[in-house]
Image 1 (cartoon, rainbow, N blue to C red):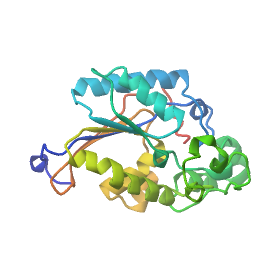
Image 2: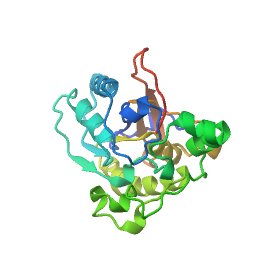
Image 3: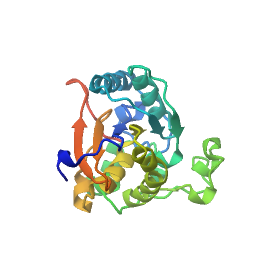
Image 4: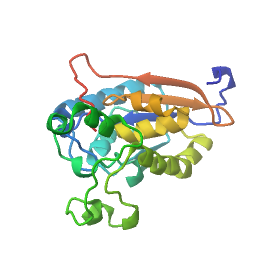
Length: 251
């Protein structure tokens, strides 16, 4: 990482926020693309994140969020804490959580008992490990979800590795988000644990072992500044969770 003295103010600042706790996070279930709401604790976390961002004084010029309601609700709640909180918001399926295939809805404790802790860990944290695939004929597959009726069905996953998630997230970042930063706008991205792990890997050029060990907490936000070559010159990690909040880390 270069020194902060190389930072050029023409570039915008990037804020990455993981959505707050969902109902299934609280139950330690695999969530993926299942569209579950925030828990009550999650709603409190989202507002706290908004207050924390507001104290920095950063003027956010654009926001990007996944199509899943737990991310959209996190953005809406934290926006309420920001001065002049109306923002241009772009919603993108490419920022959705990693698709966990047929694991979606399963309780982690049951998967661990049936498949073993090592297999569970590889499915959750591994870079190249794919989860069991969801049949495209299954009503739960995103090809049958009206939310993605505008997306080429061939692009909708049946289950993804972190590596595959990285490819779609990095491509979207390069195409849609990076130009906003290069234009000098401060950008807020609200997404998911694996989406953001994939993006952090891309931005920070992490190795596979490093990204497999990376944890991003509920409602945590990361801030980045870049130089003229779009290399990171400053980053910070902000964990706003209260001491009594447990991060279950279920995606």
